[in-house]
Every structure is written in structure tokens, then in C-alpha cells.
Length: 207
Image (cartoon, rainbow, N blue to C red):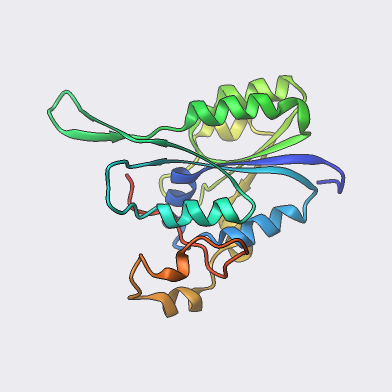
């Protein structure tokens, strides 16, 4: 990316978490932000996730709080429970519409968007952004079996970046993860703070 190119990150939180997990590493969101800040003029870094309401403690809340204080624009909405045709309880927390609306609003203000998702439903969004002159890079992976990115989304993108190639630069230090093994998820180290903390949590606890 040229130094003066304006761009924005759009992170489908659940999709990125699933992709990183399939590759066997944890995302370090501080390193991720630093990696892309060095590639041009980063206008916004959006992170989208659904939250389960009416729970005393949500396992994803520490990550959401950390991101809010450390350079990300976090977009959330409550999940909805429903019963499917077989009588099974399901949880719905799709953020596609929220992401698409913001991306369309940002299109006149950026030269490129980086979409962290492999969801094929975003193909039409990517095509629309391209018609407005925005170049779109998609970050997901084809290393896993099956691949985490839909073929139609990968084909539509101007550039495909395999998450496996980014892992050494945006992954959490394995020694840091080992040091935290056995620590309670609610430990005060993950409480929100006005300055960057060394180890942001990861997104867990949702289908």
C-alpha cells in the first residue's frame, strides 16, 4: 500500500476467530493493528461481534472492552435465541448487515478496505465497493480443509491475503499463552484501561 493511501479494516470477529483457531494460533489485536498501521493511512479499524445478553458474565466482554480502549471501533448487537424446525434452540448473532452499512458509508473516504472474513455473503458488498472505486483485500485462509474462505468471495476480491502468512506477525506469542494457562478468564489483568495492555483476550464462547 502506498504511504498516503487511505484504508480501513473491517473485522468479522467470529469469522476471524474461527479461522485463526483452525490454523492453531491466537490473534494478538495489538500486533494486528500495528501491522496494518504500517501499511498506509489507517482511517478506522472496525470490529464486529454479537454479545449474549442476560448473562452474568460474557467470555467475549473482556476482548470488546480491550478493543474499545485500544484503537478499534467496536460494533456490537445482542444475540437472539430461537427454536429451529427440529425444536433445537439456536443463537443468532449475524453482523453482516452492520458491517455492510458501515462499509458503504466509508467508501467515499477510503482508497482500500481490508475485510477479515471468508463469508461468501460479502461478495455482493465487495463488488459494490469496487464499483465505487474502492479496492478490497480479503483476509482468510485456504490452508485448512475445507478452506475458510468462500470461493466466490476470494475471486471477487482485488487481493487475497492468507491468514496463515500473517500469523507470524499478528499472532500471540506462544510463550505468553503458556504463561496464562490455567489463569481465570475473569482475571483483573483484562479489565479495561485507558492505555494499551500487553495481552488482549481472544474471542471465545460463541458458536
